Image (cartoon, rainbow, N blue to C red; front, side, top):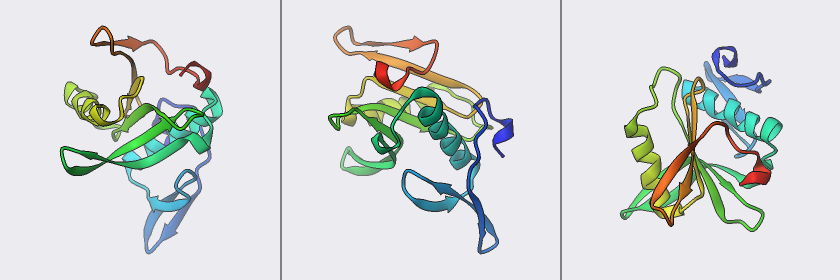
Amino acid sequence: MTDNLNLPPFEPKISEQGGKLSIWDPIRMIWTPLTPEENVRQAFVSYLINYKGFPASHIANEQAIELNSMSRRCDSVIYDKAGAPKVIVEYKRPSVAITQKVFDQIARYNLVLHVDYLIVSNGLKHYCVKMEYPAGKYVFLQDIPDYTEI
């Protein structure tokens, strides 16, 4: 399943459970249904850990937050060494285009977390913005920063 993504190859653990395929999430330490979006998440998290130097222990998948008195879940949140949130990542299945609506969703999550970086990926295209709070804007980056840069 990961061969068709614009990410480095990785070897996921896949299992059939109850007639359905599941993928091992090493961050949450659970088997989770192998949906196209979950496939993107696992491939992207592998990329962050193995190519960008992000410690697995600093990544939270399905991070719960409260937004406007409603419970929401960020696909992934990455924390710095002090435990402060630094990056929110939103994943979409490859067939979903990355649109302003997707950025609006992650921007709403950022109202709660106030991170420095927002990343959106559908496994084919990846966008990363660096927040510039004093100027009230954000800047698109050419590449995903390494962990040492966040």
